[in-house]
Amino acid sequence: MSSPSRLRNHAARTIVERMLHRVAGGTVALSGPGTGRTRAVFGDPAARDAAASVAVEVTVHDPRVHERVLRQGSVGLGEAYADGWWDADDLTAFLRLSLRSLRPTHARRDRFHQLVTPMVDPVLRLRRPDPARDARHVRAHYDLGNDFFAQLLDETMAYSCAVFDRPGISLADASREKFDRLARLLDLRPGDRLLEIGTGWTGFALHAAQRYGCLVTTTTISQRQYEHACTRVAAAGLEDRVTVLDLDYRELRGTYDKAIAIEMIEAVDWRDYPAYFEQVRGSLTDDGALAMQAIVAADDSFDRLKRGSDFIKAAIFPGGCLPSVRALTTAAASEGGLTLQAHTEIGTHYAETLRRWRANLDATGGDLSRFGLDERFRRLWTFYLAYCEAGFDERYIGAVQLLYGTPGFAARGGGRIEDEARVAAGGG
Image (tube, rainbow, N blue to C red; front, side, top):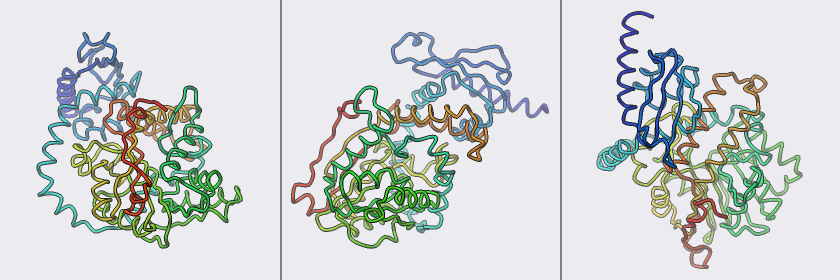
């Protein structure tokens, strides 16, 4: 390594270590050939015995990691992990500690972005909608391979937050519980014409048709998902009750009694929310309703997150955008005439869902070659799952089930506004 490189690495390490001295809520111990020393502990040792404290051992394999993190933030941290530049004895715990330490910075940045929103958003809204770009972004993630996702997920092939309503429940049964809660929100009944925006791997579409007798139209812009969905519907003998489309939501036609979108809205850019809800409302009868499950940012953090870039946007979900409940509800009311009828928090269940997915990934023994994927991909996804798990554990992000009703739906008493805090606490 050249002298200039060594100097840069030393300077970057010095800055990173100064930042680590401000760690709150636990300790980080650095060691390894990339640290320039045997072992150093940062943070608050006195917090080690506190009930919520975190103590993590980090091994640095490549001294370039410090500069990469300084330049690229969470993107550099995740990419460096994927490249094998560092390891942690408890990756999720390390990422939880990182979020705890960044809370004051996030709060200041949230306030700044709220202040500049009236000046910045009108300019950003000039970006034109581009369905082809959106399709590329979706396919970059969901077209990784159906066999890989079958290994990662449970037998329902649900790629969304499950609900663990009782001890010892399997991931598959927790996914079905999630389906049933959404079905109850919509009061699904035999013969209901149900529109699903975002097919996934047909878990909910098959559930709604088989258990509730619905006539389901479901759409996806992932080619791999479309092919899998058609095969799965045919295998179940449900072609007369489930229609699979490969259309962008903006191209949908027809009228439906009810609609559902399960963790699909995260693929919709915030500038497109008005068009999204306008399309949904135009697809519903005058007494119809929309159920949504979504990963959400805090209302106060939405402006910051929608404009910024992080590890997820850069390496996992290109073009992704976490909504907030307020942003969705405002757009639904102003553009679609849809009002919020029910609001249930399920974020704590997502942390457990992610732990189950990571266990499934680990069960491969680290060999993803049969899926056409390499070791770097395995490490990248290990970081991704732990990164999200930490976000939910620390309440940095949340997950919700929402019900939006048309005026006719609300008038006939189709729903009521509620916030089921017991579900957020892990209750049934």
